[in-house]
Length: 157
Image (cartoon, rainbow, N blue to C red; front, side, top):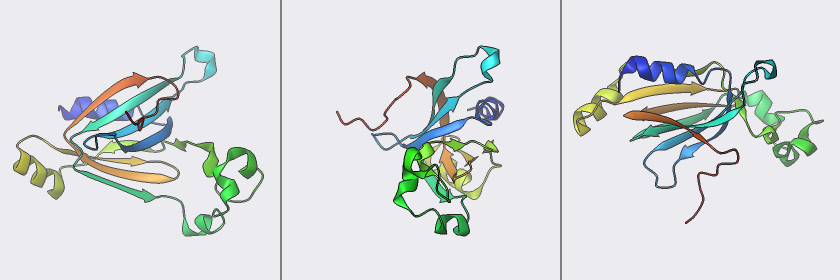
């Protein structure tokens, strides 16, 4: 995949909302669902976009919330927006994370070289930063398509 095209696709996530992330139900590709919005005055309709990181051989998720904030955010009422709105702590129940500063393609790394040589296709590494989780993914291809609002990636068939 052309790195300039990849960087452009990732730049388009900036300052939108991450509403879900995890491996697809067949467990090979990693999905990042983004709610893309614009100022209502623009007339641009919000959309949900599925960033499908294909052939994802490494996925790391770590918190970006400080230990101090975690300490005051353990109350289960914070996982529901209505019951957590007036409490001190991080309200997990908003059900989205701000993609800020967003997604960034990282330089070639030992991991991308190792996987590229072993599999015979180019691999890339991306860092996705939000106000609650940071993701690092090693993958070979990226596809972006619109999904319906309420899209559930883990529907059992």
